[in-house]
Image (tube, rainbow, N blue to C red; front, side, top):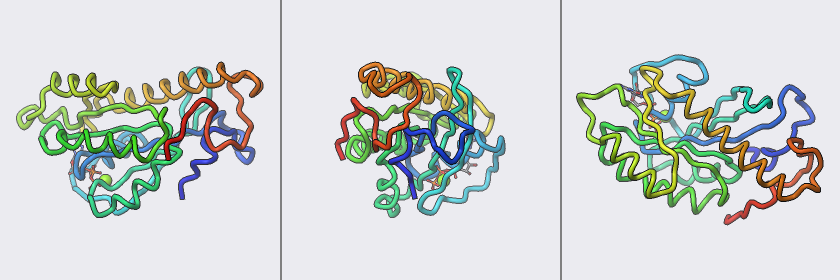
Length: 215
Ligand code: GTP
Ligand code: MG
């Protein structure tokens, strides 16, 4: 189960990291969420499509801004029938990768709905990046870079086009998301200096101060 309550605290049992961030990858079925995660975590890609059942996760530790950050990355099923299960994991997520497929108009039209899901089920201050995946498929592209960027701007989101297949911008998306979360966390620690040394949060609070929960 998702350990949303522990995401901001330093895990006493494992001193090998400074922070643990819980991230979610969401979007319609077949946009490439699982492929994106496998490319990032294992540097592998397969063209076979095995639709995710429910939810799965991988862990990866990265160094950002002098901190060792353990990423718990949840890969959700895009299929509608798993929606009740997957939205249960939104709570406590600090970052979302909201993905569509540049060759699939319907997946692009669904971005608004996915945003509504984030607003409904996650923290107000969760960081979100919009990702247009499969940018290697130029011949079958139906969503231009400009349309994607325009939508991202209108929703106030950062934007990347990626390819899990050709390994384009995959790491860049995760690095940017981690930086956005680190920045947000510094802001909330600055706003509440009583928490102790900057960058070390040892409380059991389920969420950072300054973050409004709309659950
Ligand atoms: P659900 O688990 O059903 O929600 O789908 P998903 O979003 O996890 O999709 P998945 O990663 O399983 O990929 C679907 C299909 O798209 C697979 O056949 C992948 O090989 C293919 N695919 C994923 N990413 C890319 C990409 O960047 N380029 C190309 N050309 N194909 C991709
Ligand atoms: Mg999948």
